[in-house]
Image (cartoon, rainbow over all chains, first blue to last red; front, top):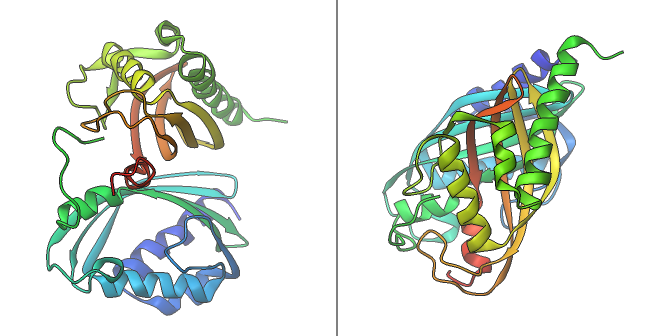
Length: 144
Length: 141
């Protein structure tokens, strides 16, 4: 698979799975033995846990819209710098729902094997998200 | 046989690797004069950070004084003029950092950075930092 093929698969994850909420597309674009390096609480490896992660995200935040800002691919890796905008409709990781809006940034690194998502790392600005939802106080003069 | 394209990706990665080894871990901030453009554009600028390479030097001095970090690169990924680094900073919070008073605590911070490299010089930067993980390790939440 070429780097542009890998980018196309990754773009389906943001468009179809995350933004259009078609969870079952994951059956076509992710491997069964998917490896997650930055798991949600309780998430293990494997496709079923990936689906549970995305379902959990979509339960917590509706609407939730990802905008891909940059895509960088080399070999089997595809990097996506994104921003999102959403509403805390279901409660953040077990907290009561606040109904508040948020918008944060993140960078994902995906490994693509034979046309399917196989492995994932990320860094997401969860601190900013929790501050925007009022779950932790805004520090004075802060901002990374 | 590497293509011309691969040669330039490797050269761009070498600039970012040199930045990590000489400037960040080697504490040689003036080495930036050889590997960063004077009009370097930092998208996640710290409060009070001036534009350009001058501001970049301030940012690094501030980071070194506040966190005494050592960088370890786990992955480098390049396409065109962009280089992505997935790395961790292991350090001790010795000084004030973005409003956090010194805690003296050790931490390991996850960061993914994206640099633009043109003609051997770093010209632009984006990143996302696991500030939540840092807050947890410093005992703030």
